Image 1 (cartoon, rainbow, N blue to C red):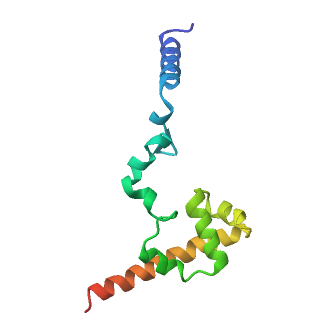
Image 2 (cartoon, rainbow, N blue to C red; image 1 turned 45 degrees about the vertical axis):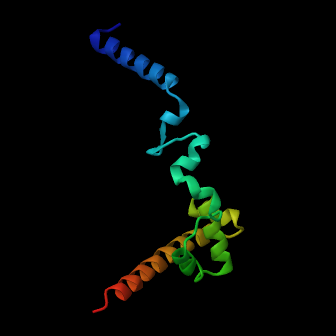
Image 3 (cartoon, one colour; image 1 turned 90 degrees about the vertical axis):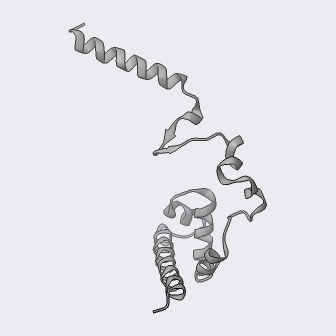
Length: 125
């Protein structure tokens, strides 16, 4: 040992390792998001989540998605269901990775347009 600093560092490392080993999986975080057991999934989304459609879309979302081509719609559905990145969802849908980024940008633009129109309908000048 080289002194108190090295001993203190080793003790801290040992405590962190022991604490990490004793922590249940669902008490951890991944990418700054908490991990939950699947048994509690209905509690996280609300009790009626199983009765909704698979993607949980609302009427407003359907209006925006209706402006996508079938290929773009497939990429967006894959992204929503799988939790992959846009590029990975595009590949899974049989498209190029560029299509994933294009769909992301298009949805973002369509959503802004929808919100702008919605706010102008509710707040006419």
